[in-house]
Length: 441
Image 1: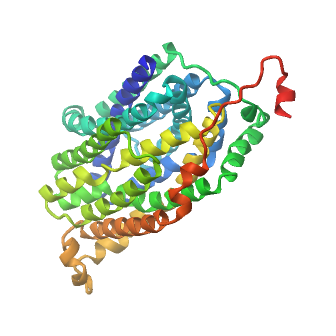
Image 2: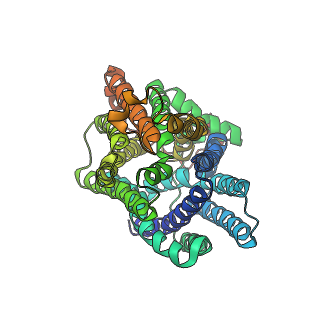
Image 3: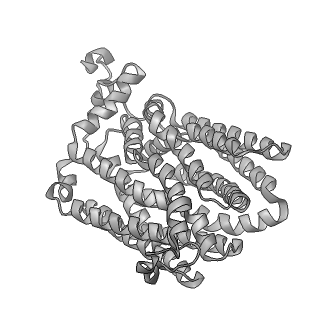
């Protein structure tokens, strides 16, 4: 557990640095262009590698020392930060530079998730798993609370360059800590060895595991649709808040901080409570509530009301993510977890790149220009008729659609009974006196 806490602390520190530079870049880009599309495209290029290379990251997480995989991820993202810094300092910055850096960092970052998720299984005993995953869920919100406050001060003092330098420093600290800690390797199991071979064979082993569990496969496609709706409008958060607050950058930092306060609160509650048994009830009810809170954020038109909505908007997220991860860590063999976690991440994000390509132009060219035009009076009582109302309507539609679809999915008996049909994995280690070739057969 000491190694787990050390790992969480340093990864959170690195994440704070990334959030500081990300917020600084978002303010800089939106202030320069006045459009939401560039920020949506950054999110698109940050997601594409997960879709294309997720299966490879899972194979490497199962083949290599997971500590080295995470070091590779942090080091590669640091290289992207250096390239962005050089572009800004040289005075030659163009938007495509930012997209390229986002792509590079995401290529390396795709290795982080499967390796970390599988490492938690090796570092934390079963009795502490829910708490550990809840603490992991605190990492992002904690960074989200701290970073906007620090970013506002840093951006005012040292600008974009100073913000990027701090991000680079936190990457280096994370790599240094990974260099000295130790993460145990998983015990080889008969099921894991049966899939050993080429990269493609091992990747297909993870796909075969999911294919034999059709209800889980259905859940992943459903979660992909949820991510399309919720993730797509969430990427419009910066332009939405700035529009609703008359481009008040101080309020932007405060409201983004409140979003993460809500997530942090949810993670603390989840760590204390532990969720329902079966966990599927926490997952599905959490997603329904998430949809409703996203819709609520779309109708709030004053900074005070918007802040209240932002504070509860993503509070359900830690309940959902913690329950999913804890459930899968119990169900999946430890030496298959890298591959299966990678494929789960890949499939759950299947529609998100498309959403990023759609949502920015929809906001800039359809919904925002429609504000105050003929017919807008139908929705004006709900979302208003000032700047940001168009994006607000997008929040409402996405949130209500998410809640409706989730209620329908939750009504299916196969979903409510999913955990009973996915029994806990009982490890069957390969006896040491039997050659691996025989065991695989």
